[in-house]
Amino acid sequence: MRRHEASFEIDSKTDSYAASRILERVYDTVREESRSVRAGTDDASALLDEFGTLRDAAATPATGKLTITYERYDDEFDG
Image (cartoon, rainbow, N blue to C red; front, side, top):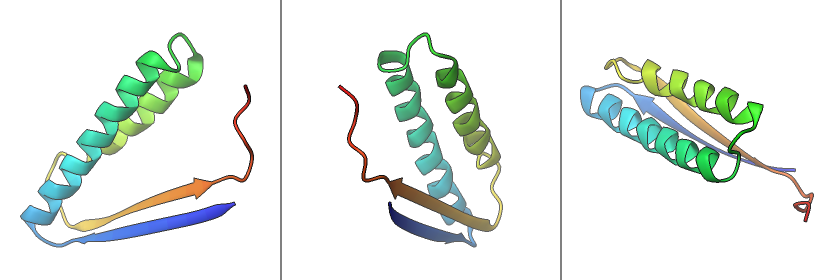
């Protein structure tokens, strides 16, 4: 498994706005993918709820840290 991580320190309103926009974009992407790829599955709603929680948390400007982790498994896709 390969792991990639990026962290962003949020210490201004501009940074907070940027983090909010990143999470808004991720939420929109996950929502669209869930509609086309995972439509009708239970995990689609759970995944969207989790990203919605992140998006909502970033909606109010605040200091903090946004860390994005991407883990890539060596397994191939089925089919």
